Image (cartoon, rainbow, N blue to C red; front, side):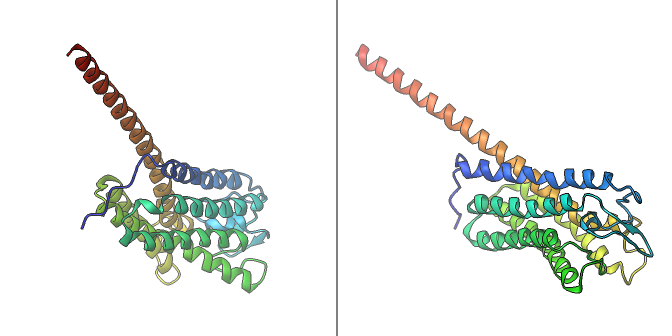
Length: 255
């Protein structure tokens, strides 16, 4: 049985789309915070993403961690989580009922993971300052954000294919595959030399994370454009109906 098509003129589509586009703030914050490193340059290949949010300055065996704008990065993590939760709330109705609840739950998992990452700054690789509890919760948050985000993309992508939105559905699945490669490499890195594919720890982590962010932004743009197109189609149909009604009135008057 085919699910009824959603009303694409619904304002929730535009609001959710705008929220998803706003997740680009994460990338902007990352650039601003990394540029502020002065004790040692931040390396997108050698430093983890979470290093940007660590409050303490530390010299480790493989890298230096000292982020003057750590508070800004953590605020961006938290804001990202809140934005995602708002978008999920606004857009869940678009998917068929069979996929809606799973996609909603996974979107919430991703959003909550981002909230934990920003609220409990640390590293997914080792204890960096603070205490073991903070590091553990940060690691859980990172796992929820990355793993939950990738599975969310997979479920939502299949749901969109069921809706016969083939373009965005296929794009979702392609990005899932790319992100999964990064996730596997990140998990294997501690025990498998070369699992980073030559990208470094930061590079392989970004191969897992950036497809999620790209997906959020692209889905947001798609939602906004589809909403605008639906409104224009609705307006065109209304004008056409008005013209046809006027023509019928004119013919009746002649008769």
